[in-house]
Length: 413
Image (cartoon, rainbow, N blue to C red; front, side, top):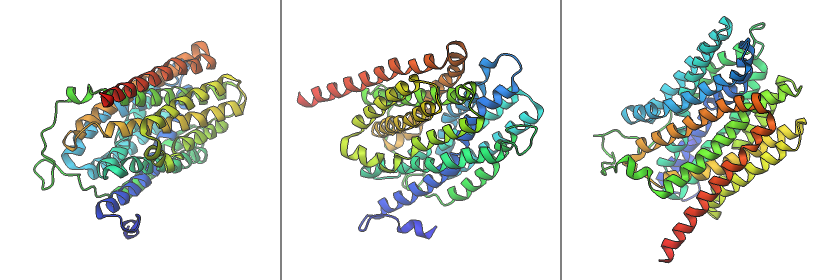
């Protein structure tokens, strides 16, 4: 890993060099550990459909289990990392991912739907730690590098977008006639690779109470932090962007297969989508630095509306794939912009509880959106699912505009 220490602009100080090194390590970890999410999401609904005999509207319940695992795991993940440090916390998260993959595979062999959903929830618990990678990169970075650090970490998702779906394609029939089991067994080697990368992580602010260098600045009550108008705005935009993305991404594979396309084409659609989610991360941080986090967040929400328009235009393969690509880009701008806003609202001594609260709220709503995706698709169809984008994105844009007007008014006064 010595080459990582040389990463950075000429003349950059030691703190920024270390921040860049950690961001690259976390980006690589995102590539392999983050591949669990596209595997779980692309296969969760199809495997659920395969396991169910009667009520197919519950097919996306395993994906909901995955998202609930992320939501429920957010606070324990923050607590564990405060106790043992982020490196050991992240290693523990990968163990949970591997265990979840094993449980899900066993459930498929036993043809047990709810055991499969439980395994998906365990994969989600591991995903709660993966979601903290972006915060770890930002917290260990100087202010001028925070947005780029978040972008670098999420850029690892480009490789996750390739690794995850390709793993599915090559392993889906590995244990035929038990479909999909091989894809979940594959989570074990992916977790081991991720753990080998995380071992080299060194975050300067990753200290525990009583350690030298620990930030002992009195922390404000959580209620005071989360009622700041800027935090509320960040939460609304982040939750809106992520919930809309999950709502369509969860239903799209089922809709594509329902329209006569093969599971392979549905999986490739998710691959293009996940690549679009993370590919802009190579420059999103620079765009935020140039145009501001609010502008980029708003652009993401507008792109999400464009996604809904394309999806509403028809049910050809290009409609699905292009809509999923726009869905990914819109999520990237909206979510990175909102996450950057969140990191500006708390002190170092407050990070764990604020980040835990943020992700519990975020992924709790995301879990609900994934469950409702199957319900809406089954009851009213693909067009009804797309129509939900308009009120949610419009509300987020309204809140963001109101925040800007209020801040300008205060500055003028």
